[in-house]
Image 1: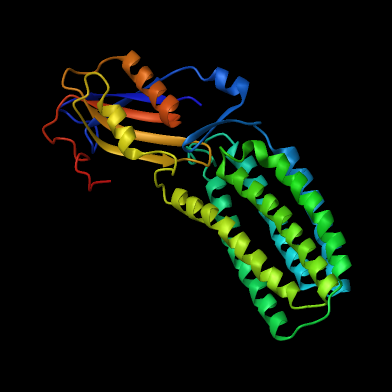
Image 2: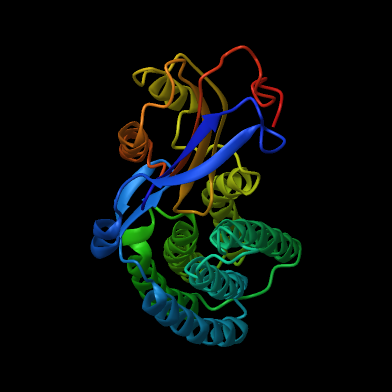
Length: 339
């Protein structure tokens, strides 16, 4: 990623509301980043393939086919655990479709109206998938409770065979996304959905074996409730982080106090205000800040080095720095309460 450092000069005859005139200085060349497919996630570095299109296509096809198989066998075996697992897998198909659309949209170039392009759709996709999964879990839990009240016979061996296939399908799909799961919240959502399903399928195998050996049909809905609890626990982090990023909060992996300290420690900087750090997407972080430098503008080299420092230390790849010579409160954005 490149980091854009912007030069701003202090003039008594202000050109607009904030009294700043802007021209642009691109901090450093970014061709090498594109050549190596270096992708940045909020708060951490990761080297991952730039395009997960094939992984999404394979995952959607495999999981759609498995959902059809699982629903059919689940109804035939009268297994609530299999039907519940199929319902969760169906939600994963939708999750993969939404994540894929967001991943493609995020790659579209910016325009005059959408100056950041559609990068933010990856955050919306992660939030949608988390909310949708929580809603699906509520429906599954309700059905499981009803089965506890009114037990019905199930076929343990059928549960075991179909869920065993699910372990293979979901485990393989999760592996397709594993390399990008640490640096992209959108990809991580897809990865967690698939990994969780593999674990759930393992739980269904255990339930099928227990029903087969003991004949206790109540084990089936009990396992379903356990599955719901496990998935909800794993989904909470995704829901929380995507909700935080959707309101332009500082990404979880970045310490705003450390960013402030790093900027104020730069040579010639005596004060800092109007600092904002937010995620433009699930892989890109932006920053704006006003630096007070009484000795005047230090030149392009300072901006280049500052941008490089922010990218190296905090994965902030899009920095906008405004230089101000006066520290007498003339800037209307200096108070912390002013956005």
